[in-house]
Amino acid sequence: MMKKYNLLGLFIFCISFIHGQVQEISLVSRMDGQKTLVNGQDIEFWGYGYDDSLSQNDKIFLPGPVLRFNLGDTVIINLTNDSPEDHTIHWHGLDVDQANDGVPHTSSAVSGGGTQFTYTFVCKEPGSFIYHCHVLTTLHLSMGMYGLFIIDPVTPNQIYTNSGKFTKEYNYILSELNTYWTLNTLSPGPFYMYDPDYGMVNGWAGIEIEDKNQSIVGVSNDSIGIRIANTGYGRIEAVFPNNMEVEVFGSDGREVNSFFTDTLQMFPGERFGLVGYPQAAIDDSITINYYDLRNENLYYTNYIPVNITDIASTESEEMETLVVYPNPFKSSISIDNIDQKGIAEIIDLNGKQIWKGELSKGQNQIKLNVDAGIYILNFGGKQSKVIKN
Image (cartoon, rainbow, N blue to C red; front, side, top):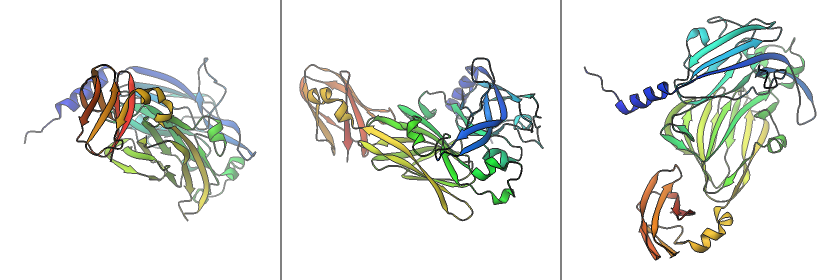
């Protein structure tokens, strides 16, 4: 039987690899990180940092640096293990060959004392991934050896090449600590008794999240791209605020048939790519609940502030000169006070054009056969939000 091929998909795939670049970075793994938690407790952590003369090559980070590349890039990552124990980098969810997979018993461990190892692979699929050490994984991961890995699609400002368009982007890696383990790494106890008691968002907790500029800020016609990952061993629940519709486009680094939700349940190692569409002004938070997977006990809660200003309050001049009604509308809108004719367009929140035409001087009426939702009218350098009931 003759196979059928999607020629457009094959063309995009080939073009992305033709335009991919060789990207090389150097990382260091160490076991001497120091951090003061939001409650004032001092802990030690292990982790990754950059290893080059232009950055803080004497410092590791919690979590590790965000590694970001384009679809089709050939990635060369040099790891220097400047610590007394073996470490690796496992590329969680990425399609790499066995030699570069970072699992010690099937590839190789990187010995301590300054040993170097080079990982090389091609970024074959866009999406959100994580990387972490795979030596005594429970201990090394819980001590901080993880980070976010992003592969951008061909189309900029999108989760995937053909979906998930956004105007602003925020990336969150959710993680946990057993603070007893961070102070007792030589005798943490049985791994199956791992008992986290502290939750983090990009390495921060409590008031630190806002203080360290992790808040989501925008206006009501923004579309907010969010990549979010769970690197812990428990279930994490992300509850989105009212007045924000959330559409999920990707799960575990792969594109899915999109769906809307107000709550994400994230199990260990899961990643999601989503876009939030503010429906009005928002002064609220994304609630992040951390649960022990064994007994479902809630042991920590963090809040990611969401501050969305209504576009009407930031565009008073446009609203005075561009009057749109009824708003919300059912089948058509009227536009008053057009002082000169010109071309207008209406787009959805993914940037797709749903109507284009000429407006004449004075009053105009536009019939729109569209689904319920929020749309943006662009005319004469001005924008107005219109809502279909």
